Amino acid sequence: MLISTQTDTMAAPEKSDATGGTYATTTEAESGGLPQFDTSVWAGQIVYLLFLFFVLYLLIAKVFAPRLRRVMDERATTISTAVATARSVQAEAATQAAAAKAEVEQARADSRRMAAEAKARVAAEAEARRQAEEAEVNARIEAAEAQIAVTRDAAMTNVSTIAADTAQAIVQRLTGKPATAAEAAAAVKGAV
Amino acid sequence: MADPIEQFEVHPIPGLEFGEVAVPFLGVQQIAVTNSHVAMTIAFALVVLFLTAVTSGAKVVPGRLQSAGETLFSMIDGVTDSIIGHEGRKYFPFVFTLFTLILGMNILGMFLTFTATSQLAVTITFAVLTILLVIGIGILKHGLGFFLLFWPSSAPLVLRPVVGAIEFLSFLLRPVTLALRLFGNMLGGHVALKIFAGFVVSLGAMAFAGEGLGLWALPIAALSMTMVVALTALEFLVAFLQAFVFAVLATIYLNDVVNLGHGH
Image (cartoon, each protein chain N blue to C red):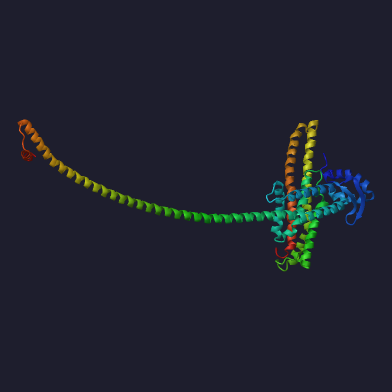
């Protein structure tokens, strides 16, 4: 393999400088060709990684996870209470809407009834007033008719008087001699 | 062409070498602050900074940063909760630490020349730590009953020892697969990136020098460049996905011992 020989030639001098007598171990370890199989650098990485892991574990277990869990629990309770509140408000609104609807129905029925009553009352009043007025008008008509009859009768009597007077005057003018009232009246009576 | 393997070399920061010490199993060890330590420290610091920024001013109505943090948080919370159940919260910090630290190192590898999670030592540490925790919790909770994990009570009696042996073997392989999956993904992705990026440079140089393929090298260089862009996008996805996969698998293994006998 080109790659592995290259690695070996690159790594070998450095290793032999650094590790001196233990060169044999490292070459054996590197026989796979990958630097990862060089176990001479393992212990340092393992110990350090365990240390980092332990520290991060403590931080997460004691600080980060509780903090986030608290916030998420808080959020969950906030949401559930909000939903519950919304639900109760909705139920309340529904009952109120039902009540309002019933009220409106009631009011509508009331107003309908009142309107009917008022209409009936007004109609009755109007009828009564009409009848009263009619009666009054009738009475006045009758009175007026009676008056007219009286006046006519009076006028009719006057007519014969006026006719007699007129006849007397005409006779006097024509004949030069006055006619008596009785003659004139008799003559008028016969004419009228 | 640049060596695509060079990026995985761990070398001490000049002036921060403190000699060597012999350790059992691993042989002689360098004591030094290396580029791997630097990468791990930066990743760690970024994770802490991010989580501090997310949680310090945490509000009921989250801002953008808090939303991002909470998304990661609830994602892992959902994993531990759905897999382990009501006891999941107890194991959440461990899984979340695994996830954020691996994710931090993976993502940082996209910006630095060194990727901590492409180091076998690092992935083995994560894997062994996880499996040791699994064994520890198993023995602490169930005592010797922990070994019931390998006893398939639903299998026919004759087959139980055989299946049990297979179960045991697969349990032993868990840390290996955990470590190698992350290691292999990071290694392969960065090698591929480096190789295609190397093509762009060397083919471009060839075209301008008029050697070899001459100007015909340019379209190939352009194609390689396209590959680099596409692979970079893919690697960001892989960086996230591998951290998530590691966290999910760790949770599944934890669940095996936490709910021993319930989930089988």
